[in-house]
Every structure is written in C-alpha cells, then in structure tokens.
Amino acid sequence: MTFTVFGYGSLIFKPPPHVIKQVPGFLKGYVRRFAQESHDHRGTEEHPGRVVTLIHKEEWDAFSGADAFPQEDTVWGIAYTIDPAYEAEVRDYLDYREKDGYTMETLDIHGLVDGQEQVIIPNAYASCYVGRNDNPSFVGSEPLNELAERIYTSVGPSGPNKEYLYRLADAVRELSPSSHDSHLFALEEKVKALERGESASSV
Image (cartoon, rainbow, N blue to C red; front, side, top):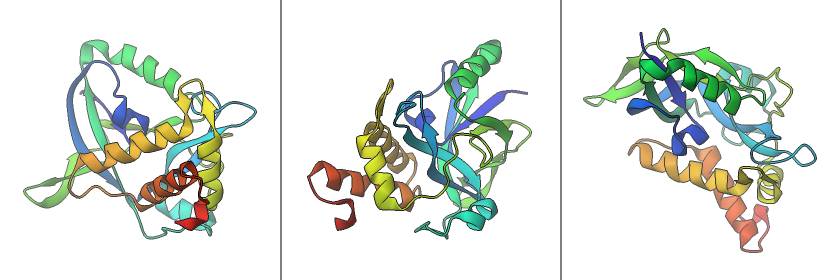
C-alpha cells in the first residue's frame, strides 16, 4: 500500500515533499468552501483569515442557507502519491501543517478515463485533511461579500489571505479542462473588486 493524499487547498500549489506521482482528480458528494478560520497561516488569533475545507454535501445543505452555489458537489484537486520510504516523515509534516482544526479522512478519488468518470484511487489508499464542522476553527457559511472583505483584510505568517485565494483559483483552473469552482471564482472576483477600490457587491 502507498500513501496518497488529496490536495484541494494550498496543497495544490504547494505540494508535499517526496511525491513520486501526482494526478488531477475530483471528489464527489463534497463541497469546497472558505469555511475554516486560519489563525496560524493566513490570519492571526486577533483577526483570523479564511481557508478552504471540505464538507460533506448533505451536512453543508443542512446549515448553509447563505450559500450562493447550493448545487455544486464536485471538488477538483490533486492526488499525491508519497515515496513509501518517507511516508512517516510526510505524515508528520502534513499533521503539523494542517494542525489548525483539520483531521484526516479516507475517501474515493474520481477521475476521467477515456472520457468516462470512474474511481481512480479507492478510499483504502487515499487520505485527505478535512476541517469537520465540529472543530473549533469551523465558521460555516458566510455571505460572499463579508467573506471577501475578511479575505481582503487578513494577513498571517504565510502571507496575505488574498494571495492564498488567488493562487488556489489559478491552480484549480489549470488542473483540467473540466475543473471549475463557482464559489472560489466568485470570491476571487469580489476580492479583486476590493483591490480596485470598488465594493464587493459591485460584482
């Protein structure tokens, strides 16, 4: 067995070490949302930023009345297979990197093979860090304009929150001709509007 970790946030543009194989793929039955506070990377304890987490679609539907994109349930990212000789080291690295409220789950990773959708890595082999809705950093659904303002104004040890947003949006676009994320791209446009001195509600 090899250790494969699915990156859907910063792991897409900042891969883990000792990767021997990587392949674009997607998850079904989940949404990717900026619903997790970041106190240690893209914000501070006094002014937490926002980073993405995965939420099971049925759980998100139960408390996300403010979500502007309720129908999306496909999350594109990258499946990284780690050199077995360094598995323990990489697990420790990821556990530290994702320590702010994230826990590991196993899940099926889907892909397109000859134009057909199928499981390319079954959950027995694939892991992912998820900020479950009962962890202390989970903030749930926020209106997009408020979320854009928070991202625009937040800065942490890893840099501006808006940089995280922009890099993630660019990375998702480059994964596949089919990769798309309306929530992510709408936030990107709103934060860019704030940079231009416009209001987030103008887009």
